[in-house]
Amino acid sequence: MRFRSFILLFPAFLAPVFLFAQVSFSTITDELSVHLNGILQVQFIVENASKIEQFQPPEFSDFKVLQGPMETSGMSLVNAQLTQYKALTYVLQPLRKGRLTIPGATALINGKKMHSNRVVVEVGDADHSPSNPYPRNPGIADLQESAEEDFLLGENENANEKIKNNLFVKLDLDKTAAFIGEPIVATYKLYTRLRSESRVSKRPSMNGFSVYDMLEPEGTAPSVEKLNGKAYMVHIIRKTQLFPLQEGDITLEPVELENTVRFLRTGDKARGPAAKSSIEKMFEDLMAEPSGEWEDHRVTLSSEPKKISIKALPPGAPVSFNGAVGKFTIHGKLNEPQVEAGENATYVLTVEGSGNLPLINAPAWQLPEKIEQFDPVITEDINKLVAPMHGSKTFTYTFTASEAADYDLPPIEFSYFDPITKTYKTIGTDPQKLKVTPGNNRKHNTPPPSGQTIKKGSSNKLLWPVFILLSVMAAVILWILFRNMRNQTKPTPVNIEMPQIPVRKDPLAAAKAAAEKEDSSTFYKAVDLALWAVTAEKLRLPGSAQQKPAALLGLAKMGLSTDDLRQLEQCWNECEWALYVPAIENRVNESLLQKAEDLIMSIEALS
Image (cartoon, rainbow, N blue to C red; front, side, top):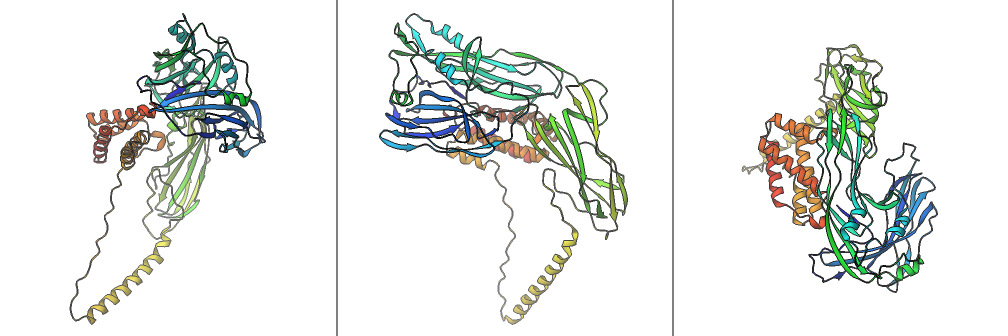
């Protein structure tokens, strides 16, 4: 992961032969969907232009301009290609709901009139939930005014001391004590007032928790926070929602970053803050930089480890409690109140609310002895980007009765622990009546495997017309063949078309294709998905249960060797680590591909 502030650094090991990229003019936003009362940051960026004139921002007819324009500029050198940019940033708030368009800007760039792209933003209902503990602060201009000269070093100024006071990593927790199953939001952040480039060199392990990332790497724009009266540009390194799995004091390890900081040594020529320029003057000064000699300084930063106290759930849990922590409601519906004997009936139970929804299992349902019950199919619709997670989890129970009768289906009980009131609560559905009428002693239908959608109306009644039609067609075909054989004087060879044997789809096909293209980002994602797909299929794990500890334990019980288990965990860790390494520093690992292929064969061979 790479973090940039105002200007990107030149890696020292690259030769000073610069290739300039093409001129571009683009519009980007930090979000593509916001709430009606949310905040949106829009940037109009010109790259690699020597002269920019007559810049004209669009009319923000559907938005209120909270702040802007704010000026930023920078440059980067990647693979000997130099990219320079100048940008105008606006902070907007939508005025209405719907699909709102942000038109492009116009400018005369290198003597040619250019238009930036337009961006469509989805605006939903206003968000009345509790405020985010880490809100985005739109005050970028404050930071720019107070920190734009922090990259300058006087003749006798100490670079290390300046780095110490203006660049650090911090771990924020929304709570330091919680019950088992109660979510904790952990956010690792980089604070900087310098021109720097950073890379994660060591990620924190989070043993003892079920971990759900709340932000994608490279998925957020920097924000501004003030500490002790100073404004800092803040980059989120990782933001996760942690669900404790065991009691005790657990320490969250620090994250480590390798940083390259660039200073301009100006002697006693350090400038004071410049007066604000007009938009046109800003673009005319695109290439302007203060005079002096550039210095690169490398430093490793780490956050302070923090301890979290995890409390056991209190005694006296109801029998129907299976680990749900939060606040929930349930409702159930019997889809077929009347069926024939031997036919399938379905009952849909939905659990809604906020809490550890991904970890909730299907509640037990004790049906009458004469009813045969199958494993429920589980689906979920959960927003994992809010804390606590909010959404629903649906359990579809399929069952059948072989004897005609009127059956009383008992209610389903569901219990959860409310961490706010520190009490257990039990809720339930209403009892249902199922009428089973006499059938034709047909064998009951088999439900689809867990995780697939049940298709309604799959009754045996549809099979008889099909069977009759196929029988008639077979008789006609046999009669035609018999007549042709009688009319022939010589036997002719008969070409028998053998049925095609289905070809096994290679789970690693996408990874191999990415390896040929040297697409490291797609490669590691494809390897990770392939290993999880084969593991989930073998263990029949729903999406919510696809956690490494559970998967490794399940494979161990099925007989996967200790060495293969260790290799599998290493593969997952390497793929996960690749998400935090900049693409320029990442390479396709051919040995990982071979290791994953061997592991997939071993997992598929388990019985």
